[in-house]
Length: 403
Image (cartoon, rainbow, N blue to C red):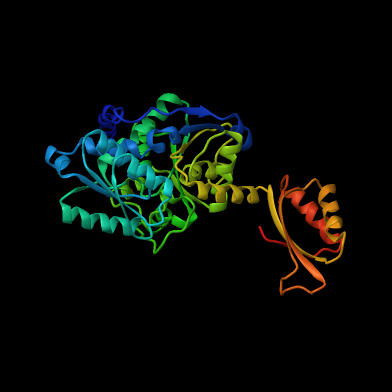
């Protein structure tokens, strides 16, 4: 099983390509939760995510013959970029298989770091199958994204930094995809400070670790569905599973809506951009998915910031909806002069700001003497939304909430 010694040995290798990222106290999230929150900003890491650590350590352990033959791996994006950069810096040829729906930004970045990219499959598991075929066909060395002791050891250097930068830490919260990150961090922490809790967090739509722990055996999901593409794996690893069983105190899940809310809060309140997987640990704290005490020192590990811009816009809107900041409604008006103005008077009275409005007389679902309007609104919270909708309906408007 992975040891602290292996992580300490990995550290000088990892320093060749990675940064010692900040662990910053957050006044905002401490006030919101009642705990003392320190954010481990691994989203500021080179390549935008923690994966460069494990990739660097694994490539450093290759024999010269393995380096000459080149490497291959599968990844949803962050491991791909880490392998690409680490391989290029050491003169190793790399080929990366990514799911066909991998974020465009991650695909482009992987190519820019020097790797050849093959798009295959609907998710990580199918991409991995193709990568193993290339391993056999081209005699390359396969670099597993998480189920590898050297990769885990590289990721574990984050745990060393957390204990150094925040020695008063009581709980560390870590996202789980395949389990390599949390295996490394938990080992680094538990072998030095067994009193510190390690909490793992998965997206509800990719909760293989939680299911595996519950059943006491590895569970492979039929499919995954989450905005946190960086942790969208059908199963945790055979080598990571026993480490999680032994060294992780609890594994919880969060919904995509909660992930989106945490992402928006980080962006708006801390000016910190993360991807879905990076927001998962904070979501678990904000929505109290595990128990913690007032003033407990908690470090959520924000594991990455590589989010596709199209996904970012979608997640922002979802986060605003969840916090009552965005509302889209549909109603029907009489098709007469002044009808829209009467409606907008109510909007004005409630200071509901209009983002956009669509006016349609041709809908088959309404009378020919009516017109249908859809309106996008900026609101100030759930109470504001409730009061606004109540007033509209009391004035006789039939209102459908679309978003």
